[in-house]
Image (cartoon, one colour):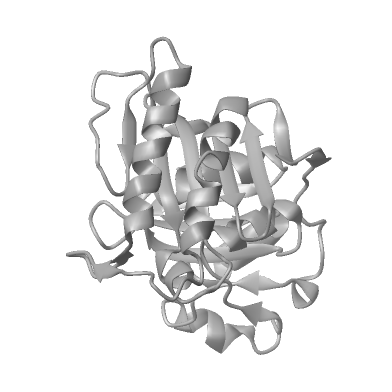
Length: 249
């Protein structure tokens, strides 16, 4: 966990040098998402940092530079800038995601969400809790659904909008890894997202679960993508019901 935190911190200054820069350049990738030179250089530096700090480094799978972890028990998963579109528009909800995943169990054992524009780093490891600096994190307490703040993209879940008028009056849409961190902190009770890649969810899964919450993941309609619900156990269950989320196996 300490190594993962240090690796994400190693690119914070670089990323912030491009944040709200009038000379920032970006382009669209084939899938329509946005990429900047800072995404690419940050991933290169994180890979180099991990390689330099480990005698026998595990392979790395990254959003920008790919990778192949076949045959390895563990691998690192990195998203150098999660929320590149907000980053390119001057919004502070972007961050760096880094996880160490057990490829057999198919879940992360270490996860870090670093929010450089906010100066906050969220980290977790299996059995070691979830943290923001020295602050131990815990998901939101059990609340009546009418008192919960839930984040969801309503265009994906129109049934939630239709059903939320009474039971869920505080429905919002917060962006990217910032929203995941706010669930771990307990500021958001739950969130629902869709069509996410593995690097979007690996770090958040261990972070939320170590903070006492629930992470529910299901295969999305898009091949290779995942739908996700994060939250306190009761809120996550209620949101799953509202959006007809598949039951866990």
